[in-house]
Amino acid sequence: MRRRESFSRKLFLAFNYTFLTVLGLCMFLPFMNVIAQSFSSAGAIDRGDVMFWPVEFTTGYYEYVFGDISIWRAFAVTVYITLLGTFINLVMTATLAYPLSRKEYVGRSYVLLFVLMTMIFSAPLIPQFILMREVGLTNTLWALMLPTAISAFNLFVLRSFFVEIPSELIDSARIDGSSELRMLWSIILPLSKPALATVGIFYSVTNWNKYMDALYYINDVKKYPLQVKLRQLLITDDLTDTGNMAFETASQSVQGVQMAVILVATVPIIMVYPFLQRYFIKGMMIGSIKS
Image (cartoon, rainbow, N blue to C red; front, side, top):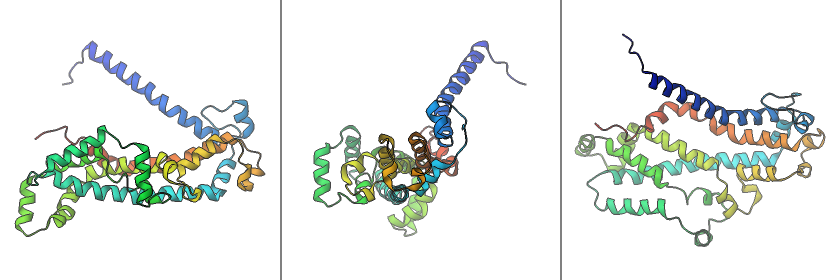
């Protein structure tokens, strides 16, 4: 028998659905405008005729973007630091989170305190830059990956999941002669796919959007990630000096090229989420239910 809902609950649900719908449109419609401008002619963009659907459809902006070697180079740099950086992040975070989740390891509370302090106090920029220069990481891609190898927030998320793993399972593996590293690789990590997927998404998005670190530590334009290249295109009004004939001969809109680059920089990382969605939803429930 279907339970009748009260008027107040119906009113709450109606308000909730309306609010979420409006909020979703506020996020989705600007993205639709970016897509529409990236496929519209220069005249339509200059006249302000483009809203949420392409006007005078053209793919010239994407021909320019994919014909620019510097954009491909920046894209390759971003993919490299995202893949390798996320791998480093997961390895370093997991190897630290595991011992911090076991009660038998002495001193873990002090380590957790030090990690927590990094969430409250961050290193000043000038000493951090001097340190990076002294260890020889400036103007290298390692400067975009190693200093942020472990995020305190992601460490606590992964540790919270490791704590929920039954200690009896770990004790059984120790009785069978398994080493700590073997136990982490063969038992803990396979059981932690939801948490690893959640943390992996956080890390990969952070690595994909590397911007400030590249401005601080990278001087070679050939090592700029995609976000820095995107900034260069967004703040300039003249793209004809890049040597890309696709732009010089098409009489295109600079704004259209900028919209196309924004999509090129955004869509790849968005496409990762559907493949990890089921793990991500499970991972976000970490710590919300106690047995």
